Length: 245
Image (cartoon, rainbow, N blue to C red; front, side, top):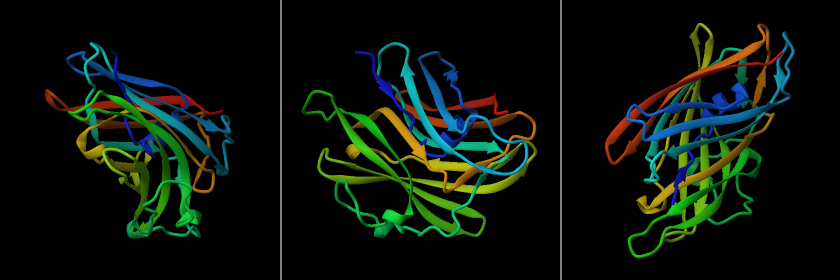
């Protein structure tokens, strides 16, 4: 069976980068055994040259195995997004890690701090049974601002091997690196007691935290993913530039 693994994160804002680029970007591992694909779209697709326009982002990312073997797990993602993309969580309620719900959806706690939602499917491969796909809901929470860093939590509730909550932590800060102005770092947790491999992922981040302008007719993103497989750690760079005028 050909196995597919969605690279999380995109989580969440890696995810920002892919979505801002508004088209797919693919990179192949050095040994040719798998590809990392990032994809997404922005609404509205066309942006004004001056003045920040609120945007929503829909995104997805996957690791595709070339030989049918189980793809590697993503452990970390680093992203630098275009300087014309802005992030602002001021005025939004902050949801602390200990304040997030521990039960399945629907959730009442921290509701006003939700800034994005989506779904993911993992392949649950416990030693005592056949691999089974399990789908769960993803929710992105505003984790607050500390200094120059804005924090987010991407939360999912998994029923296997027993009911549990998994969190991916994202840190975003403003930087000054020429074309690039937002730095995003995402740490990806192990899933389902280390028996879970991501199969599919989709996520939409709402307009209440993101805006962008398009002064020179395109937006750019670059970064790298760190993946762990049977052959050890592999770091893959990626970049994309797409029109927005």
